[in-house]
Image: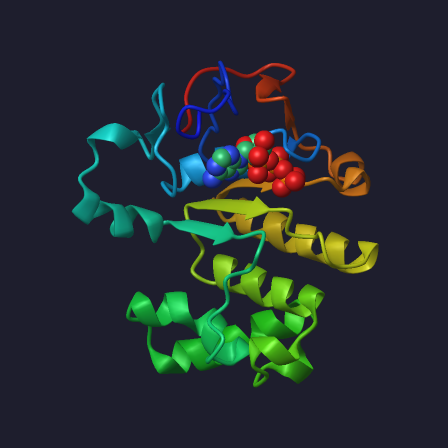
Length: 217
Ligand SMILES: Nc1ncnc2c1ncn2[C@@H]1O[C@H](COP(=O)(O)OP(=O)(O)OP(=O)(O)O)[C@@H](O)[C@H]1O
């Protein structure tokens, strides 16, 4: 992957995420982790190479079908991307509302999840009134509420203490147990060591991974 005519940012990357698997994506700052996640959730087009997503070649997916595909992916963005005019509760409810879920279900599940991530007292707060760590947890709740087929999280514990980070990992594990494929980019070695999931390690755009191969599922 290159941006315009710049140097290669990712090179010779080949791996598969088997459905239902859980992986960490590690590597130093600038190694290409965010770029790799953006390629998977179709925010970037690869300058060369092929990506398969849900058994389809991404290059062959018409633009009009992309929103539908994206809805099957939960993403925790590094910069959160919460909607500033919506409360924490309404931000988290958004994927369910878009999917046409019943309000009764939304009223039951969303507060329960916000409670779990420690935001029970901040459900009606607007993002600007929340700390970075609190906004991050709203973003995580929004990404998991619809039980996506694939969860991609870019440094999802970057703004919280170790105790909350563990709790968030338990949430990702729970989602994974229900069938979601999980890929988490992180610098947090405590988490990587504590949860013994396989690691995809990026160094200067190259992947080293003890024991897996080929495209992205
Ligand atoms: N839009 C862009 N245009 C040009 N270069 C880019 C662009 N986005 C990322 N890069 C470059 O690609 C490389 C990888 O960046 P990326 O953000 O993927 O790294 P990262 O591993 O996620 O880093 P961090 O852990 O700091 O978020 C960097 O050298 C960065 O400067």
